[in-house]
Image (cartoon, rainbow, N blue to C red):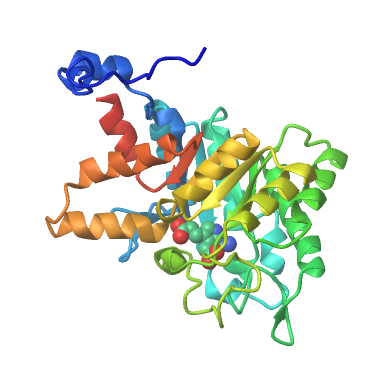
Length: 334
Ligand code: PBG
């Protein structure tokens, strides 16, 4: 027997009834946003007790390592479970062989140790890609104008090993080379870092929304050409699923779609096809757009911030990397 129609005709059904008062709206809300949904990306620089604001990301600064323990304490107190570190590498340390990437005492690894000493419980995520250390700004080695894959993967494994040894809890390969997840997982297992997780930037698009980030890490000037031979074509969707599946098979614990707001359809497909921990990165350009409009008085900054973050939850994401993390957590906790 077929069921009767679920929606009886008006006025038996009035869908506005359950929107008519806050108590009803609270009862039937389908998604929630909490500080535990956030991973906070933080830019790190050399120096002492200092910060440098990033002009294209109003409200975001690079911080010296000695200031990170305080920031991590604040984040943890707000209920933010994880911080993701991005180093601003001094141009003099950028080379063709990218050796600074696996230096145990590089900025990122020093930052990891400083936070781990002060706030051992907060999860630290690190970035795996050669671009902050590469003289030409690419995520992989460049040979005769070609971004080479397999030699890059070997370097990424060295980089990941140094990060795990420094105490990183989550490795975030953002480089889009083929085979890096399997190689990183094998390294972690053989080195005894069996509980270090991998959050793969599996579906990472070649996007102009990364512009302000490249300013923040000092890669804008260095980058020659574009990243189209390794990052995804924004026109593709099925390919994202193939990449996610491949990375899961190679040992990724969690997967990411990046950028976020312009790719919510991908988030939804990934979550519904694979039912695995799925994250989105609300990237620098998305942050910059909202902040710029709010600064002009064109949008209500707090409201669009929370609305944009809720959109990720509605799309099926388990969490969001967002520069808004502390501000949103404060609002949500208030
Ligand atoms: C580098 C990396 C990028 C971002 C995170 N890791 C930039 C890029 O691929 O050029 C972008 C983050 C953002 O825009 O907020 N591999």
